[in-house]
Length: 151
Length: 151
Length: 151
Length: 151
Figure (cartoon, rainbow over the protein chains, first blue to last red):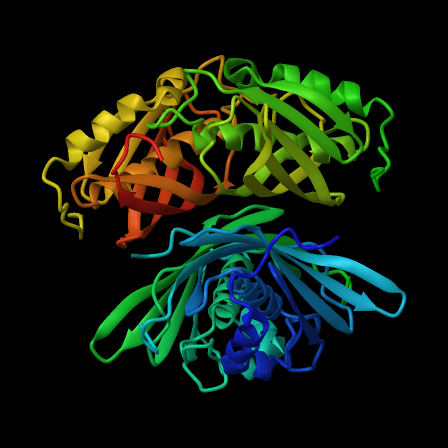
């Protein structure tokens, strides 16, 4: 299904990749940006021994981190040049134990706005015999001009 | 203010500490369990260069990870012996940029239940000149018998 | 797209309709149950002068009420005979002013469970010239045996 | 405990009361504005036969409606003159069956902002023998200049 959105900044994929590279938590978790389309971003994360909760499954915080970044960057693909994004809030439902070897967080814009963009992410567990929905997130993202290096 | 709750398992603090030690993500983030009372748990996390979002502030995923664990363990302090907890879902509002040198996630039980416990966490930024509320989380925790090592 | 779910109770549509009829708030709002399929339920609500917020748009509480019932009944379609549902929590994002003449809340099961079912609802504004997404909800539903008339 | 906030508009209580009076859903539900302080607003709602879910308890949508309005108006008390509020999103946990004869929704500002204000509400069930926490809500409110009668 083609994306219903057009990116106002033709450099959107580069802008997202540059920002993602500055998110040091993504490197610490071992997460990789794997797809950037207008209104949709995918981040992949492999299970690793340092990312678990008490039963050895991926910790909900690691799932939330990649889903949050996927939603924020999905919003950023639809922002005008020179803008940045900040997560205002998110909610995540943890639907199954995160026991797969790899995970894909797919963030999508539900409703773009000049100030606030709503996004939805799904996190899939990827195994050799198929994929399953592991988590679902609903986020509010603040879009604003990047006037200064830090606010 | 004394806790309004009593812990049914007198070993609750030990049970929480043992489970926390198995959450390898906590060690990867550098988080430490600093307080365990009936219905209330605190986890501390220092800012670190490998935990940031694109502006150098702590990533929302790191805040969410410690707040989620604080809420889960707050619920566990009120569970009968031999029980375990799983986060069903949580929602977090990010109230200020997470620019403090240290953070304290304080999880508290709002309403304990045999199957479901609701918890609320606040994340404070701790600086030399005071503290500020950085994030607020509302969680649902599933409490269940720990019959098998893994489900 | 056919539903990926099968209803364990062949009387699911009747069970949902009977329960909906006992939700007196639905009648007070003027809401109608318009579709019941395994894992999916639709409720329609017309704008009315007694249902508004301060600008004359539909109040978020009215949108939340029909989306909450749509999600709860979507979960009920997949419950075994003699079961009932209770909302544990929900989160709703209000994406546009609710200024349409009619609204359709469509609740869908994301992940059914013996105890907890996760559902997602969208609320569409229906106008003569098309429809638009007005709100998005993510819910957790408790499914339990209906042993007594009231708990 | 005195409020930690000061209201920039000295007419804040009047402004809230005028806006509440235009929310026709509040009259339909029978809700009353009972307290307006800087950063805190209380709305009372009595159980009524037309406001129930399938077991005769107050419907979660009715609880959500009054908690949402309490949070929105708590935010409005801290807005400059000539501003208005819109709910961006909220999340509510339903902690106990809403079987009390009367309910009080108490909304409080967690973090005021020029554009976005975060609020938290509790809904108490009020009975002759005491009160109990029935629901907890966490909301994001958009604060904006009221330039036109409708946007």
